[in-house]
Amino acid sequence: VQLQASGGGLVQAGGSLRLSCAASGSVFRINVMGWYRQVPEKSRELVALITDAGTRYGDSVKGRFTISRDKAKNTAYLQMNSLKPEDTAVYYCAADPDPFGVVANTGKPFASWGPGTQVTVSS
Image (cartoon, rainbow, N blue to C red; front, side, top):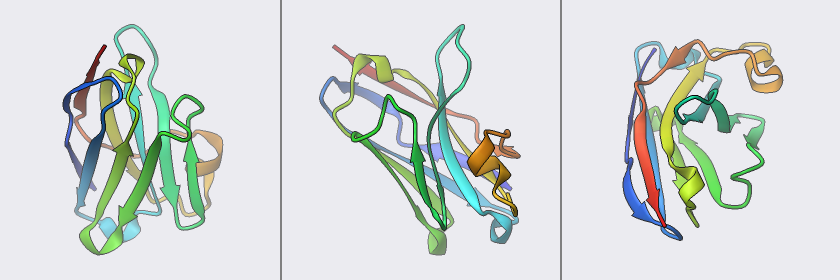
């Protein structure tokens, strides 16, 4: 599976952005897609993930971000509202077959990762 994220950029605090993650290759195997983010000298942080069973969000984005997926387009989205300067990071999309729900429920690393897109929120 190959992933390509887009939609990052510079936005003022309080604004919105929508990230897209287009999957190609063996997309029929994907059962979970997610978004992570990372800032320098910190570990990668879960932002949100989505399966057929539902969604899960990191505590810092609950109520502000929404993850969705269009299987017909093999694309996942991350709608980010009420952005804060602390949301500034490189955002990575990820995908996994996860046939038994291990990745979605235990934090096991995703198998496929996109190259990342920069999101910068100015104060």
